[in-house]
Image (cartoon, rainbow, N blue to C red; front, side, top):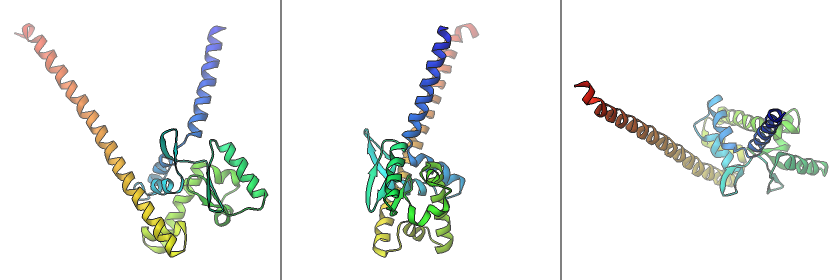
Length: 211
């Protein structure tokens, strides 16, 4: 009986942890995996997600999935459920100029390309749609700079400012990746060095027995 209770508590804890992990999703990580899948330039989608939904929460800066922009005002929610409730309320009030989720997909222009509002909110579908839309823009304009700019707006002034923001984040994301790679390489080198020292010491200890 005790064992069953422990296993039950463990299962509930794991489930709660899984839910919390989903609620605390960083869109950048999701964007990173999707940009590889659909062959976008490295860190481009991640940088756009950071530009669109970058948010500091509990001392951590992340691209926040539960973000809406309603008539030009950004709102950040703790959970998907809270965001969905607010979004449905605004839609019921006949407000349509709303940017949704990780990549701030605009309801007016893009909702017809989703099965329903739930799909539009879903971080994976939201990011994947944005990535494919970027590819369409690139194929049309033959330039990543133009694709990035038109992703946001067709107004020249807004396009220019947005492109500058994305490029800053793009540089920052690539530098962060390089730094993380260097840290990982340093860990591997330290581990290899420890192994070498260990085997050297082992050989030294065994010398009297080998002579």
